[in-house]
Image (cartoon, rainbow, N blue to C red; front, side, top):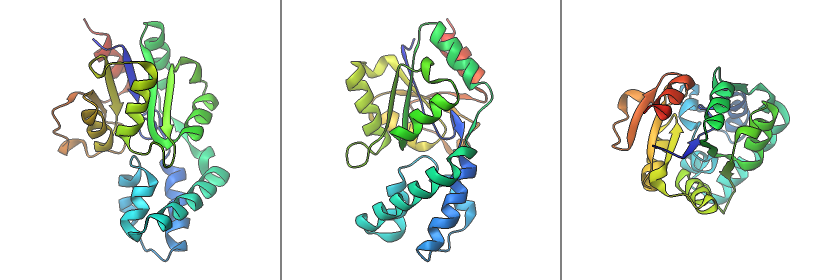
Length: 212
């Protein structure tokens, strides 16, 4: 049914919440912002520049905040990232079955690649498309870049992610989406027409894409 499987990173491959939350606790106060921590989960998924722009309404200041966030996160907290149970086995199984396992993320490209290597799953991945500021930042742009580089048609691809940003980005590219319920999305309110399956575990993703 599908040839290319595009996995999101944060909330799908890895639980990055601890490091991201700790970084927000430093960055928001730095700019005098008192942001309720109950809102933090909704900022895992979209580009950080969008998150900060929603507060500053100033693009330059938003990118300044992004740079501060990246500096703190990469030097202090990126090591708190945890690989979700079942991901390594699922990647191995899907790769062995002939699927092109890919990563499409609004996480900075270099960070995503480094973490894939750290957790020993990089060799299962055919292609990684990550965020590159002022080049590709939205989920649609990340996916379009991957489709162009791979020469892949949208109807032979499926996005696998946990938030509306994944679902909507896939829809903008004409792609189906499998929603992962172990991440940070508001699954009960996801009604988009391109959703083909809600998976509770990585194994359920494998079962869905390999079924006859």
